[in-house]
Length: 520
Image 1: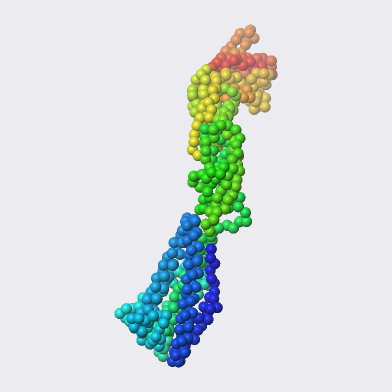
Image 2: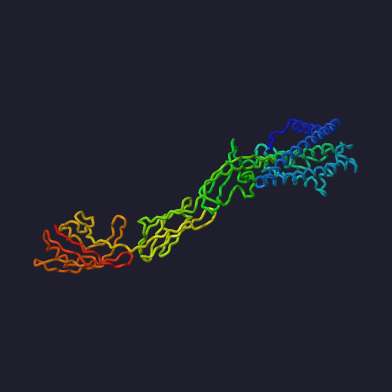
């Protein structure tokens, strides 16, 4: 992009100085040589204006090219530049018409601003610019004010912006013997010779064209203001997954490092350009196995050329597969919650779904809970998976045997240490027995740990004659009569806990094996 001109050229500074000096000499009614000097200034201003126009055309052409190559990135700046050009062209056209009107007022209908006959005429500029009927001077001042307010915010350099605002200022001035404030147009054009008025208008055009150029340069620089400069650009292939289930599409992002998201490169695979949106490459693999493909990206540049960046990538196509395992064992138990682990390689858990026959299957965090309904009837778990692009399909169906929960084992809570479950495998102290309120039942074989509810039981004691004395419990707790029997037990005596009834989480009531207790 074109760079902003921060300072006036030496030629421009000389022209401005000559204009100031000649204006001062004119105020002293210097000879016609001064008028010749104004003619030379006018010629210099015309030449400088032509140079400014060429420079502005070049900057605008750069913006046009950038907008054509990448309208999303440069379109806004090109649109603003077009408005600046139109506004500046409108002022310059107005000034050209005023110069022609002033010269023709002095020289007649055939007057030519490039060849003025009555250069010393002091009335023409006042009549054309200060007439209350036409209001040309006031209209020009308002036009300049509008242009200054529109262009100034577009100039990024604060020093240049301040200079242009001062250059295009139309504030009233104090002049004359009364030192009163006089309007901009009166100060500039009252009693001015025709040649001076024309030179002043040309100088005003010069200021407008300079401001236009600075605004265009700032807009052109803004196109690349947010770009990150790098010394190397590489092509990368980013697949959604290198593992693809057969029948599902393979997708990968093929991009450039430090890529400009507003400029989409052209994608070529095996020498063929793909008609695709952005950088997504998609196809459906035909068979399982490992594959490799290559291609290149063509990146458009702001100057209309392009750069090429090659890449190579590989991928693996696999047959549909799923992993389904029971956390407890290779069976499911009816009527209870069975933890299940379900996963599909290469697919996140959030994209995996499953259903079950002969029961219900629900997701609980990262695991699944299967609850079969009927024992003796197999349950089938069907697994489906969704790929990131939205494709879904069934990947596996696993069949499980459904069994009834085995019977639990009765036990006395506590024991010698107050924490273990006592199952009659050794003698128990009378003190520990007396501290026990009742019995429990559970499956705790190291695989399952399921508690059952004891509904009732009997204790059987033997008297000195060997007669059996049964006592009925109070639900799961020892009755008062059973506790009294415990107190009468002596060392080495034994009794039995029988007819134990318990119900599990599957809702099935069952009678458990008796428990033999020996008092130590």
